[in-house]
Image (spheres, rainbow, N blue to C red):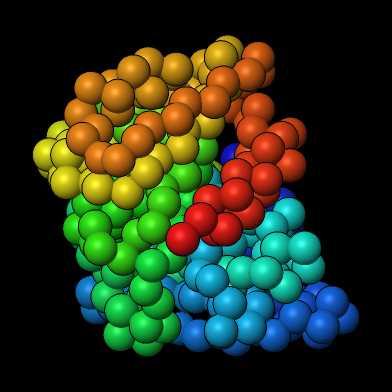
Length: 272
């Protein structure tokens, strides 16, 4: 526990620096811009990959996570040569105030939309949310029903209470024990224990989603239960919902079936 709290190893913080992304993008001849925006009295890191004239794809990571979650997409020229990919470290993760998350799904969605509207000026964009980033993305789609062209939800925690909470979560949430766990785990744990009430607040906003939605769910997911897709089916009132399942757990798609998601991104982007 002491080692986890003190070490600076990358696998503990789970993030890449701006310099790393700039170096990798330069090698791939991919335009890139990094920025720290002051939102809701906090600094949040955003990175834009690809030419600004390309169709926009916005990525929302889960918990624990960071922009690094989407390395398979943001470092793939097959993606960044066809999309302008915008990703951010959600508050509490990566380089956005590690260890101090924002437990409000609604406020997270509002803050990200503020940056997208005021700094990136994106319109008619694709939006993808993974795990705990799923409800943030869905809330954004409800609040910005004219801007989001299509919503992709990957193993997303949409329903209050339909996710696993470990018994140790309550122990490490105590102030004394928080300092003995890595910051990224501390943020994830704080967010998890607040997620039920945070989701109850945004469920009514799901009903305002008007774009099409594609959901991906592992049939054997023991972290974010498959019933999340059934719940969303009941509240969704948009243009069309597609649910894609396959055997496997929480990472059945985001780590193991990238090609399925990428194919759908291109197919939806090609539609008028």
